[in-house]
Image (cartoon, rainbow, N blue to C red; front, top):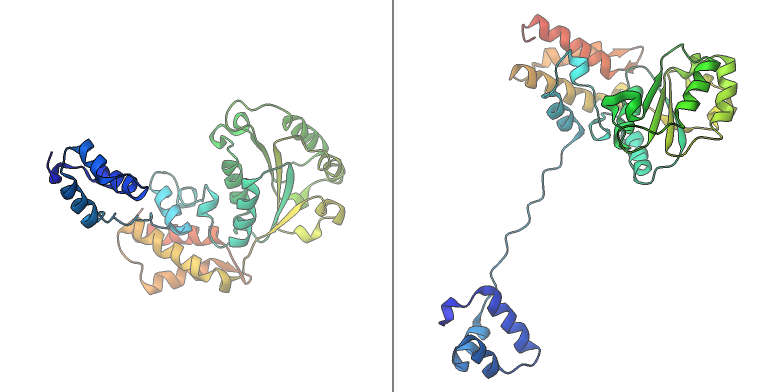
Amino acid sequence: MTALSLPIETIQHLRQRRAAGERVSMLAGEVGLPWQKLEKILRHFIPPTTSPTISPPILTPITRLLQAARERTGTLTERYRPRSLDAILGQPTVVNILRQFVANPYPVAFLCEGDTGTGKTTVAWALAEALGCAVEHAEFGGVWSIASGEQSADAVRDMYRRLHLTTMYGSGWKVAVINETDRMSKAAETIWLDVLENLPIRSVVIFTSNFGNTLPSRFRDRCVPLNFVADPVRLQADARLLVEGIWRQETGKAASPEIVKKVLAAGVEGGKLSFRRIVQALQVQLMKGGAL
């Protein structure tokens, strides 16, 4: 055996043994080399440098949203609706709270409150996915919804019964999404007060409301509040990235400053910005340009 035929791993192993006190003459006999030659190899051996680990690129919410939309069909609002917490735009505080919750979940009720189009219902479904619910299977995957204006006493009792069921798909967590909570009946509110004190295991209730401040304090006290931002100044950066990203993805070209300005302006109403209105305005502009 020659010096050049010694594998690097063998040389490294022999160096460790020599450092531990073993005699070079004994080590040389094992590998079939004169001890003088092995001593020289061990003394002058330079371990090969390892290639630096290349960290994967950090994906921003807008990047995740654009990537996911490529696999979908339908209107722009359907394709560019975030399906995961990592793709939620403009609500970092809400997302951080929910990420911490997902890491150690427990039965609880959340109250998503804020202006229309800021992502309240979207976040509710994204949380269900993060908890492992099979959202594509709806109630069979552990996700139920009470539509706006349908919160009767019977609807609440039925929902409470469903939250005790075992799911057919998914992780076993169950999520009930209750839209426009401020429109529920007085009887429904009374029943919720009791239900929220006795939520079944592995269940989460998510209320959404455009007017959360109108809800009774007794009800609000039983929920964890999630406040959604609609301030155009605070959301401007994310809104601009959304417009520019969708336009480039749909047309292959950069959006002109005029288009960006027009779409952003259409997304603001009453001093409040709505991402949904922005995507709807984008669809109109893209149709005018023949891109859709």
